[in-house]
Image (cartoon, rainbow, N blue to C red; front, side):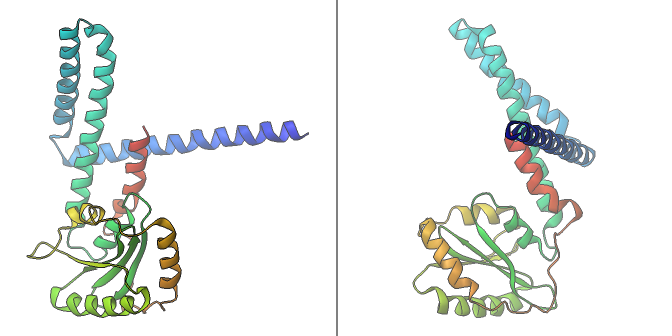
Length: 244
């Protein structure tokens, strides 16, 4: 009886994996079609990347006298280069569309790779200004978006509020935008990920518990779920591409 149950569970798990894989392929195909229609240079550039990388590996094989042995390797690397190029152009296109829209920074933070603890819209205004909080190895990162004259005050208030709870833990703050001393939306993730590692995972867990004691300030406006319809799917597409 137990063996039958195990077999049934294994069959269900296999079926679920197949369904998930099919859904991921469908997402990638949809993203490709959307990007292809808007980006006329996509396919030519992907072909160039494939041919160049494959040719380089094949050329190395010629020098070593093992060109036919390295040809499949070159094709695999060529396909990988084309996929990476596709992913970057999709990401750039999505960020370009999201730039300047309310909630864009929160969406970008939600799509960060790694074990970041993101709390969106810990403070906000009815005009669509928001402060988002990120916990990670660097410490606490506050990210503000909106009108500069409003988010400056909003960010300062939130920084004081957080400092009273976290003690000596480092606090970093960024304002998203394209003006001086601001961080462009497309570079926000990389700027945060380049911050130094100041905390250990166990310290982050303890910090998160302390931060949970902070009462959520009721923002005057509800932050959008995503800056654009396809924005919410971007993380799933990126994950699917990385696993292929």
